[in-house]
Image (cartoon, rainbow, N blue to C red; front, side, top):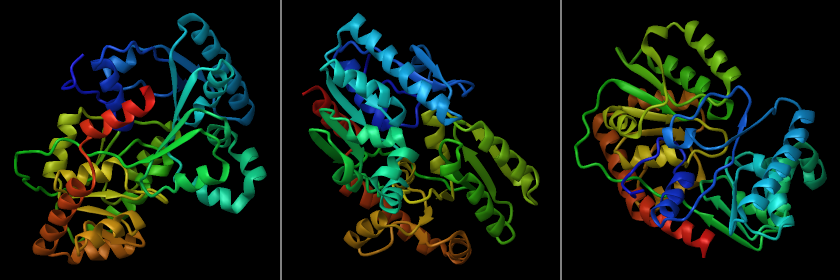
Length: 364
């Protein structure tokens, strides 16, 4: 395996450290936890790994899945006797518990916690446990290492409240390789990310419908693999009923080099997640010299303060942002894009360096 090889996955915080392990000839055994009926992964290497299928549509099925994951992990531990169990996401709570019981070095990677700090504050610990048991267990089981992304999601506050890991690391994402070719902007805007409710593609569609009458011949590309088939169908119906349906395109997942070419052509990229938008899409967008349109959040404000100017087109809602985008001059857009690119490359590390740091945390 060579570090120059790419995974066609949208989660570099998973794949980039994995590349380091593989390049150092570590033996890595996978146990993929997938919901029954979910679409296949786009990456050919990852598609070949062992799959453990679960049902997650009811609380009873989730409870059954927890024990299924727990016992399957125990079997794998007995069979392989691994040095480290690295558990990703809340659905792996059963694996975390199995690893700790077997007294294995246990590392946990947290994702998608953007709404849970507010829920923990609102509900209190006991009610939070009953509503989000896997999230609670992921933090509260005494693992050796807990790693979370510093993307504005306040995971550090959740850890301070209910975390029991021996070591906690709160790390910013890295940025991809900086392109050498200049951007050639076309009349397209992008919404990039897995098709699921929390990514808010339908709200992105509403934004496009507000700007389309003023921005003639503009096209809207929604890019990403489907992880929520019900939401995907709802999105398709919304597009079908839109007055601008002929200008909206559901692209699906793309190879990374093709996605990056889209970034370089895009007039703008929109990101309307609830609570946290400073993730990989925002970082890729800014690195590749795109105009990012998103909500006004602390993460962007802190970066903007360092560069004495905006790094993205920010607002409190889609109506405000649509008006700002319609009125934005080319000169203003160029200044924001330049600030954004400088902010990312000065404040963050490239993924190759960041991944080595994370791999060292896990294996060290």
